[in-house]
Image 1: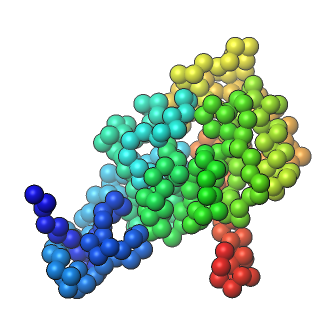
Image 2: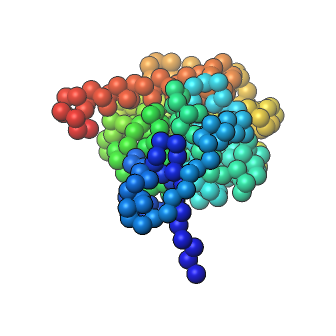
Image 3: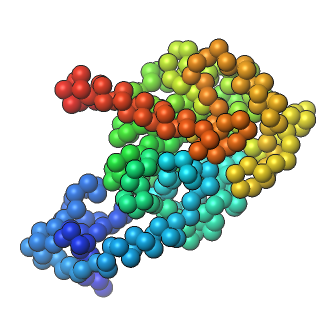
Length: 308
Ligand code: SF4
């Protein structure tokens, strides 16, 4: 037998529904919250939600920060549950050692609106914004500032905000990269995964394509290996070192500097992290490119009389 739905009403007199709840009045998305009067007029029972203040403090006190973004002005958000179906072998999040373990208990990982206020929300570190996309967009729409992360070049221009595309995810890391005909204006940058053995075959062509042809900035992310071994012949370029919270085989600093010098002539090629540190607060690439993209979108909207 179906249990009768009772909708919780917040202190502002409107429903408190979350992603995944079906609106009893058939509305789609969370940008509109039904009022108590509307619900009751439709014969739906309502009840007062517990005071928001306690809930908010509890959420803030129990928040498990991604140590990479903490203190940077970015806050992470993963609305999905379960493992990312992309299953990249070397993903830090899928390794069983992420900051959100056990994932069964700690996902979804969604900051409250108060926690996100004044910060930029990074959708999907540890998953992909094209996985359960409707849910991801619904949650993101509630925030003032949010950007998406995907490694799947699907309906990119339709993301309702800036996005980052990882162009050589998973098994493509060493073999090739996603090519776009044109770059949508909401693209922040192309993220290119770098190791010592894909430099000439993947990284250089990807940089030439995105920076040279499409005029899109590139951020180089240096791969760190844990379960996947470093390719034979390149072991000397790596050492065992802690990166953010766990130790991995990471590229030695002198190799990173060499790679950085390879791209000095390109103004818009950046490294993920800075001076050997992987923390976002030492870097700032994402915030800079997020705001630059928002400005670009704003100019387009203003010149088109409101349409993007
Ligand atoms: S590019 Fe910089 S800000 Fe963006 S994820 Fe990497 S370290 Fe963080």
